[in-house]
Image 1 (spheres, rainbow, N blue to C red):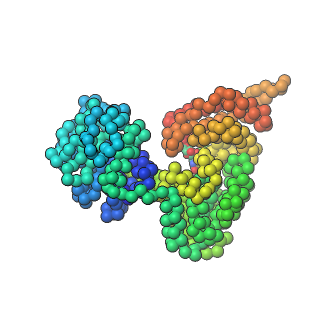
Image 2: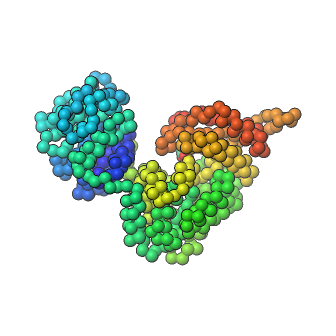
Image 3: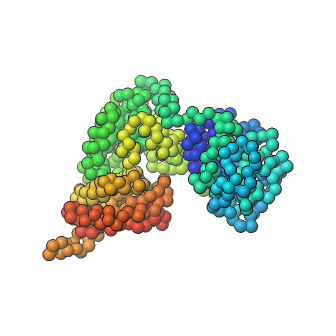
Length: 507
Ligand code: XMP
């Protein structure tokens, strides 16, 4: 497997995803982490960084067990670090080099660039440049503006490249990574969804034996894939609990529960809608609502878990982006673990051990594993849905009547997207109920009813997002249908704000 040392580049996770696309397993650690054992890896990649090797407080990894001993690839900052510290020279470039460039020179018969030709488009993003290469280096590629675009240390399998092979705009980037990892480092491409399922099921069997495991299903992709994997390993010793907090989409609880049962999961549906509504009564602060929903969920889940005799483990659908150690904000040596609502969600009073079968997977890999497990594609392609559900899409306080209205509106919108073939083109969509009434006219009557917002965004991870340019005709049809059929709504608006500066949810 491959070790990726992170220097804080925005592209580090992308390097990992590209390596895994090659069916090679890899892990990311901060450059100064003490939590990895170098003997476990077959090759090392150094990421880019917002830092410059020219400054004193720059990251300084210890490569003594790596360089010259394992195949090593430095990308951008990684390449500059190698050049700077082993006899070369790095300086600020006259112009910051961002974006498209083309390879103007590629050394012939160089394994690293096999099947990559001159002219190939690469993506640059740097403000320093390598002015002189160390003496024992060989230049293997240049672009028009960057002479030392790629180099190799003679007698070693150490390479440095100034451009970013991991971004999609570097046309032959994946090929270059493949050349390095497969042809040069001789790593086998055996890490596939099928092999992941096989080895994970075997490991879970051994780890869990005859123990009972409890898992909270949400209807989402992660918890579902985790449940199916575990149930393959331990069958009915997996106890799934699916809680209806009363803030799910229309008919979601019944439909998804039925689907889970059809998949052969040992699942119990718990309808706690009334309890959630009662606890939420009068609360209109977004964080206050989140806290109540989180607390009541834990109470309900805990009550249910206590009904299972002798349960030993709590399973969670945690995925890799939730657990990757990230460099601390200062880039200093105190690496912190990202805090996230799915991590460490174990209440103290439940003294269960935790099992997280998806802990090493990215989201798209979870979907691929789900496919390999033959989970319904519709279920795997579902939009993300927040844990507090419609609770944070009803602005202000929550009542049963407001939930009913929003469920109707949301169902018309989402079903419409599906019917028009737009659902899969959107990353996340939903409706918000505003806490204002507006004046309208229906027939000869003046109305004074609620306004709702439709929101559809494209994104890859929810961190940044842009609104989707849905066809006017679709919006027109949807708006008509909502106003004509949902009692209590007389106005529909479409949200055209990007994130940042707005957020995806309104609360
Ligand atoms: P924002 O609104 O922060 O949302 O742009 C980004 C993504 O996170 C989801 N989201 C939540 N998910 N609990 C969750 O489980 C929450 O409290 C929560 N708030 C926002 C949101 O749906 C979007 O996908």
